[in-house]
Amino acid sequence: MRGEHKLKGKLALVTGAARGIGRSHALRLARLGADVVINDIDLQSHEEFGEKLSAPTVVDEVRGLGVRCIGIEADVGNRKQVEHMFRNVLDEFGHIDILINNAGGLVGEVSESFASSVSEADLRATIDRNLMGTIFCCQEVAEPMKNQGWGRIVNTASQAGLQAQQGGVYASYGVAKAGVIAFTRYLAQELAPYGITVNCIAPGYVSTNRLEKRVFSIPGWRERFLAQIALGRMAEPDDISKVVEFLVTDLGDYVTGQCLSACGGVIKF
Image (cartoon, rainbow, N blue to C red; front, side):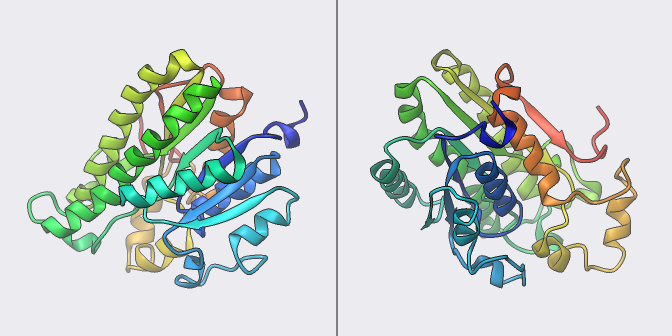
């Protein structure tokens, strides 16, 4: 099958897709022919960090590529909202073939994310946003995928979930992402007999509008991060989406239970 039509007839749900990496995933899947559900806690969240779109919303951008698309605002860390979202998707499309758990991020300030001192509120919120949101979405999609005998699930970890960051920052985030990796491996073993693959990706430093404003703008931090990257540049969102394409198309049919690091050589093992 020609590359641009590899996912024709498939339905993909991407969480946290109203901007940044999630938006990139949604557009790439649409170009491959998939119909797409855009989930975000705020479908206009691109406005917060000044991300420019080619249409009023990512939903409109995806529709412009000639596929069906709907947007659903829901907090993936809230189980009832997740349940409602998946009921809506199945009512609208009748099936769901691909789940990309992209929603996440650190809650609180980087300077307050240390293991010994992170507040309970920030820790719980970070775990809810990254780990529990992933678990809730996977649990909701498992049965429909089992019933149809095919599915592709891609979770989002981070290099912070694979190795401790210099100085101990991002501890709360790293703990949540390490949980995502472990959950991915267990779920992959459970769902493999049903023709469902479950993998996760671990992005490195990605040049999104959010990170440019919140992290890379801190004096000296951009240089600090670049010094760790063997390829010598920050990732663009589409660098990560290309890995997603591999995992959800026929290219990744024999890959499951894996965490693929897309970090430009930061992690050296």
